[in-house]
Length: 138
Length: 217
Image (cartoon, rainbow over all chains, first blue to last red; front, side):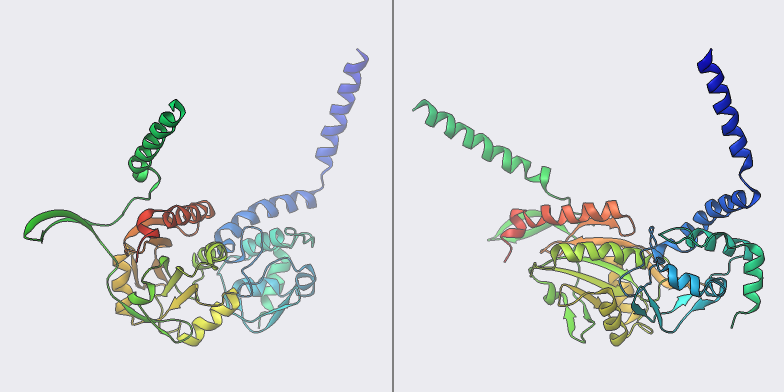
């Protein structure tokens, strides 16, 4: 009997905790899981299944400092591509990445995925943020 | 004495199995085959001839001319790619790097990658690509040639490559083709699939151990 009550209480606490997951956390979870699919379809062939890149031809996506410093430019990188020298994890890359004409929502999802995988932890990159960032593309 | 006999019989059985089994551990020979009747010492002899890779002439990333003679006495793997390929090529060459690392010490092994975009992928561009991929020496050649020549030889490897489609993309197969010292096709592997490439590495080892390959002069 005692065990039953404890079980019931534990269950109730669990349900409460789950429903307590904030709207933000749920948004993050949605973005992240959808973003992993966008990644597989549009990024993985070059950047690899673990974001490892390829030698010094294709940069890895594991440089958290670079991602953080360029957070507001990431959407433009995805949409319009990137060329010129960049330093990732201390190595110089200067090949061209082609842009991919994804929707702002897809960009937000894939960036949320990348920015919170492979050792990165930048939180949700929202649709609002992507829309703002895209206005500033060079 | 008995023991000796047992050993002798075991030896015969073992050898018998080995020659019968030659086909069991050996790789298949792919491509078209034709039955040909030749006259040998005035006698008609019927034999099966397998398709082989024909003569060719390309230039590698060092600017050296590479012909079928450059691959005489060598087992090699061929594929088709281009350096600006946004789709399957990086994955193919990430996997091919494993093949390269496994056999780069073997002087009788080569990898050849034909560019299907010779206009952009000039010799210096191929050299730069090789450097960035981290490949050195003569194990892995990136080959430049006339587009027509490359497209023509792709058919000998049972591969399909074609001109850019209206979206500006080249469509090409991503297979790695294994060729033996007799220039016959011995295997075809999906280059984007790590498991297939692991099988390719195992198959190269099997092929290298075939008597036909060991004794090839």
